[in-house]
Amino acid sequence: MPLAQAGDLAWKLAQASGMGVIGTGANAFMRTALVETLVQSTGSLRVLITRNELNRIFEGDLDESLQEDLVPQLQVYELLEEVIEHLEAELDLAAFLGEAERANPDLASRASGERPATLWICTPGQDHDVVYPLVVRGPDHRLTAVMFGDWPHGSTFTLESDGSAVQLTRPDGMTLTIETRTAAEAIAALRTYAATTKGNRS
Image (cartoon, rainbow, N blue to C red; front, side, top):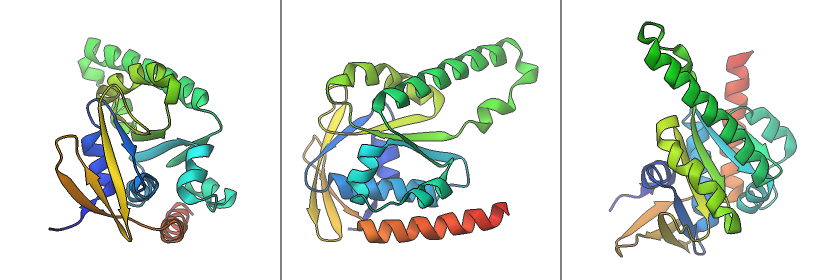
């Protein structure tokens, strides 16, 4: 059976109500999903994440200069609360613009087409009830959330590490094999991507 792509699976499985990931392969899955989302992006995709999760999945090795080179496709926040506030403001603005576009279809906006699709990687923990309202608004505004830990408002997937791959077990018991990247491999891919995009901008 061919190996599944972590990035594609994250976007697909979390689309409706978000998804949780647990198990020994969770870090590798998140790391690979982040990298695949960024390196396949042409500016229309972005990842939002807090520094704790970033350090967790890259084992503290993703240096500040590379993070800066990846902005705005990679946006790193210090606290979950900061991401929540940012997304609440964005979603409110998107909803307002959507109403304006429906009221003025002839002006139907370049703005909505310009909003990037967002992959949000977070650890809700006890704040899951604050995160959930944003997640359910997400499909209308190109927001998809993938979370560390059990996700009580949607599906939680178990991922077990197996060398260069992880086994993802769905709630129905079906398993998928997903090729993953080590932290070093992921960082190398991001350096190449950053160098390419900086060259294109200059």
